[in-house]
Length: 437
Image 1 (cartoon, one colour):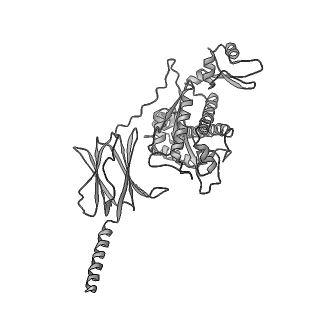
Image 2 (cartoon, rainbow, N blue to C red):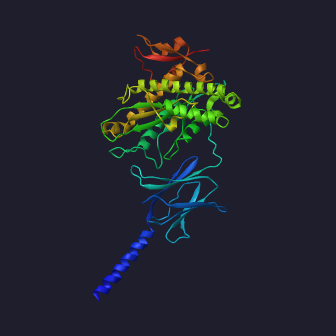
Image 3 (cartoon, rainbow, N blue to C red):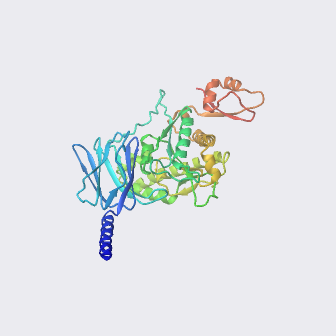
């Protein structure tokens, strides 16, 4: 009798195991990250997803079938304030061992679906990006009454959304620190007459690396700055560094651009149309190479300005600009740098990077580098070029009002140009003086 019971129990457990085997994977969570031009939906899974998807219209829906999967979550109240997704719900799948998820959409969107392998705090994921089909970035209105434009600085706060970047020992997220520094830098730039900051990421959402330089270009950026916090497997490394595009990566991008110059002539600035139309390949290569070399030279020069300012407020991990292959810096027409503001994996650096006062110092150092670089290299059609500065070193007995009177400018203008918060100046201090017409 007991033997018969044991056999029945064994058969029962075998059946349970078989049923469990049919649900080899599980959906453990759903995260939604709205952004100005897109919405990202991330499904967290216990294993690598086996999936299929298709779209339906009238109304617009995206249907995802997770094969051999079960859902361990509730689909209630997932969507709160997203304008692209009305609702996420379950539906009856064709295969009873699968889970079907439906995204009810507000419109027809450009779609990207791809899996991501485990990394850091995240396991296996399936990512869905919904992009607005008529993506038009509101370009900066940088023309003033005198037809002289503002210099535009594109600021990229590293990581964002479901990509937290590096995480410090105290739980600090790189994506939050970079956004805080970026906002402080943007404020300083926007307070400078003749300059305009464009925040590529303004909130907690993710933008692909390829999209970042494209957004900078749409906003007619003269410079792209990507802000990050470094990390290492050991807590010992510390300090800031500045990265530029490696020569090898720049050359490979150059070769790709030349091969596709009919489609990508806008990446080459003023010479773009000539390069596009010419049938002389040698001429096209020569003109494009000149543009690439100018961009690389400008990037390196600006990087040296940044390091000069950073070393005044923090330890440097690298004393010279370092060349690496980085997608965010690949624009051949926009000087671009990536600034590692410190090591989030170093306890001392992590503490400083979370300090609002230190973040402000970092922002001020980067801003000062921008100011210095463009005072030496103002674009010809810019307001800064029209109002180029002279420098005056303060001597004993001089006050701000005395200097202002001497050069026939207002005290307020002097303070704005030099980013002064008071009328106090010191002997030996150098002030920038705008030339009067």
